[in-house]
Structures are given as structure tokens and as C-alpha cells.
Length: 122
Image 1 (cartoon, rainbow, N blue to C red):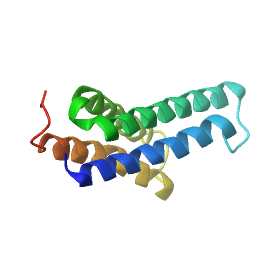
Image 2 (image 1 turned 45 degrees about the vertical axis):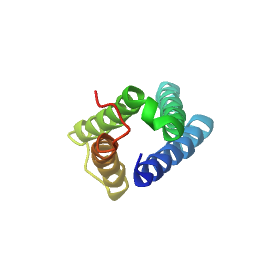
Image 3 (image 1 turned 135 degrees about the horizontal axis):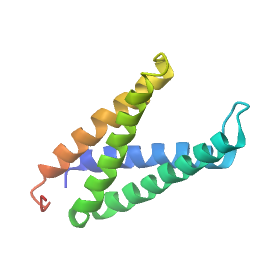
Image 4 (image 1 turned 90 degrees about the vertical axis):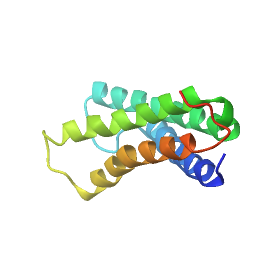
């Protein structure tokens, strides 16, 4: 497996750990209805779980093609959901960067992983 793929996957896992863990523990940083805070914490927990899965994949990528690609699809669909949200509000700089990461990184990483001679492509 290409070391660059492992490094990028590890970086994505770290992002998921930090953001997911922080969001689950701290909740929303603004005054909001309890249901909104609850939903935010749930999705932060899911994001943390994606980080756990990615960390596992970094260590075992040659044997976890399906899990890796499912996690990449999950991240990509999160980016799509954010784009749909842009129909409701204006895009701000702090929203554009996560969308770009969520749409570009999964495609790039699946492509990089598929080029490894040790991976069984599905």
C-alpha cells in the first residue's frame, strides 16, 4: 500500500477524532433547542466512529477494502448533504473547506487505494 494513502487516511481519521470527539463532548457552541444539540452530538459521535474505522483501515488497508470504501462513501455523502444545505443558507468560508475535503478526499483516497498492487478491488 502506498505510504501517501496511509498518511492521508490517517490525517482524515485524526480530523474525525478531533471534530467528532469535541462535538460529542461540547455540543453546539451556540444557544439552540435541545433537539438540535442532541442531533449535533449524535452526528459528532458518528464522525468519531468513522475516525475509528479509518484508523483501523490505516493499519489493515490491504484487508479492509470494503470497509474503507464504505467509510469514504459515508464521508462523501456528508459533503453532498452539506451542499444540499447550501440551498437554505449562504456559503461561508468555514463551510466551504469541509465540503471540499468531504467531496475530494474520498474520491482521491479510493483512487489511490485502488492503484495499490496489494489491494483486491471490488
